[in-house]
Image 1 (cartoon, rainbow over the protein chains, first blue to last red):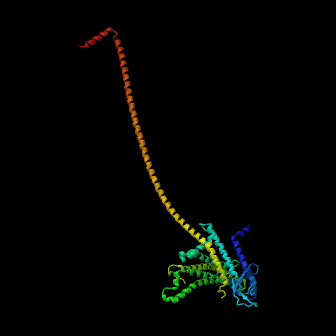
Image 2 (image 1 turned 90 degrees about the horizontal axis):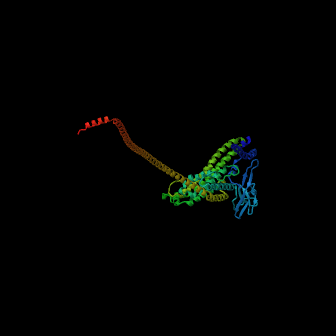
Image 3 (image 1 turned 30 degrees about the horizontal axis):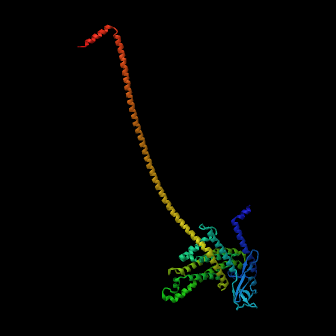
Length: 358
Length: 163
């Protein structure tokens, strides 16, 4: 009786779950730390780089079991044709796999075509379109986004005209926030056209930021801290801004006010077309990557010192950083969306010289 | 440099994912959600406006009701006072009529009484006259039983007569 009532306590359940995950994280760590300290000083750089970069396998951590690398599909587009095989063939790094057109091996996480002797063949053109860890995680978050928002959307259909409920009431403030605080003030009455883009960008960045903070399975990646992802997002913004730019926008670039400033202003304005998306790209990438690096460095402290006694200090700092990262996750999603809206707003606004940014 | 070199593969997959997300969410999530929110906002606003209008209508109706009530009350008062007046009138009329009738009956009774009295008096007179005549006759008869007395009376009567 007493036992079951204790089990029913929410606090107990919560602490049990926490304890489980702490054990899940700590166990392989302790064992590897014991191995490492005996041999040589721990170098955190490769560990951190491995985490914030991409890879062709998914490192999986189970309690009491050594870390497992789950192989992922490799898709290569070569000058001779398409190659698809499992990355298990390339592991461990350096293993040569003979494909249909070339032989391949992993060199510093990149798949290179090699000749018979195992030397990198520079003449072969190989483009790597593999489903890497980041791509898988993007599929996961994409699926999650689709499930969440399609169900929210159906909730709106089912409960038309009623107050929001459940997941719907959790998402509605965020959607309204994007609409009322990001889109409307910057885009004016034409905001409705850009709402889908802004909402998608906001939630895509937000969910990937948040999942990136989760240290185990559904998370544990660094997607929004990857320059390729932020590049795509900012290129989309670049296109949207310039394809929607009206005549005021182009006049501002090619016919700046005093005519004698043409030689200076035109190059500056042309640079500014590109500098805005580049700033977006680097801001998001740097913020998220920096957060991940800081947290991993703090965790690495335990292994650098080679003692478990430093772990309370590490954990306190990591929890603190996690709180900040949680803020940053929302903040960066907000800032990216806000600046996108601002740039679009500047391109479509009717009145000349209303606000200057950057 | 490794960190800031975008991989072509990830660029490709991100583009595909993002475009799919943008398309599906834009069509099946954002559009209906925003439309629903907008519609709800409109309905709330119109409901508020309607409520305001209703309130005004209510206030108007209340004042109207009050006016009606006041009117009805004054009408009732006037009707009541009129009724009271009519009642008094009726009572007065009835009283007067009763008085008149009463005095008429009293008068009649008096006349009747007088006439009855006169009749009775006349009767009494007749009876007294006949009674007195009878008495006189009896007295005279008694007196004239003896002849001397008759002669004395005749002589006296003759004396009085002067020729």
